[in-house]
Image (cartoon, rainbow, N blue to C red; front, side, top):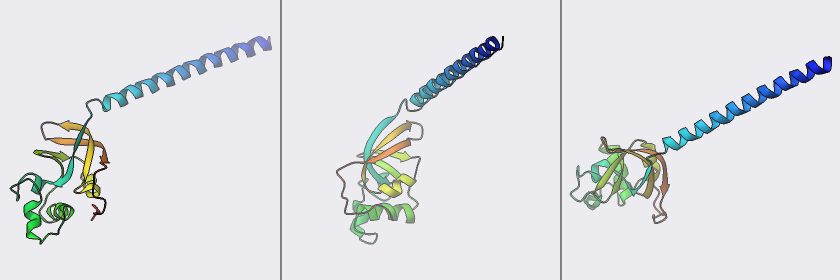
Length: 150
């Protein structure tokens, strides 16, 4: 009789273990679906990390650093101009691609990639023209002799 009870208990434990395993697997699948949905709508945007002052013609006629660099009081490179405009003129880091300018929700990325060509992956909020950045990659055609971080 003891063997029958012991066998029945083992059967119950096996059944419970299977139920737990199935539940854990189901939650894992749901979590995976949630991760796929969070990256749904993610796009990539290529451009240069610039400052909002130059990119949005606040003090530039060409949407570039050209006028500021001619002055020679802020430095001699686009990196110098980006940092000057962010620190001294209240600018923010943006992604600039020709005439398109996107705000970046994560300003810390601009610090590392100022005046560098990058590809930004994220979702665009069309109302604010802000990219919610998931990741950023440096493009291979950059001048590596000029550091971005100040």
